[in-house]
Structures are given as structure tokens and as C-alpha cells.
Length: 98
Image (cartoon, rainbow, N blue to C red):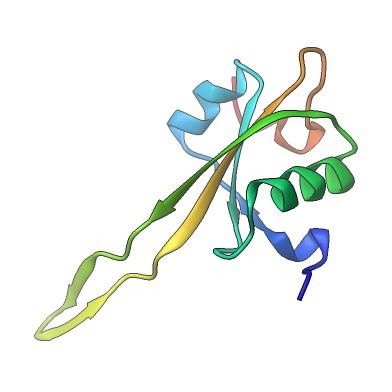
């Protein structure tokens, strides 16, 4: 099953590190765990109308968490760092960083 472009990109990641990466034309997103780099590239290009240079992905494993005496785990997820070609920008992030 092929997911829609808006479904592949779950949410943008706005942290101090991702804000620093924005100055190097790199943007960070949470993506579907089953999405591959080609699908992520097409989704970003379609949703934000930009040209993507490269995509790096990282699987973030779940970690043990505790609420009082109850044990549990955080969810695992996938992060994508998308590099755009020089001169391109995503307007969505303009107020967030740098």
C-alpha cells in the first residue's frame, strides 16, 4: 500500500539541533516507520514544492519509562533529515529557527 504524501510526513521536528541544521539547508521530520528514502523525498517535494538533494533516516528505538510503580515503554519512531538543493527553503520553518 502506498501512503499519500501528507500521510508519510507525520510532523516537523523543531529542536535546538534541528534549528542549527536549518542554516545548512537541512530540515527534520518525523515520518512513517515503513516509509523509505524515495517515498520521503517524493512526499517532501510534493508537499512543500522544493527540490530535495538527499535524505537521511534514523530509527529511534523505544525506551523504558516509568510512571510511579507502573513500567512501560515510549514509542519507537523514524526521523528523516532532508537536505534541499542550494537556494531552496521551506517557508513553514521560517519563524522556527536561525
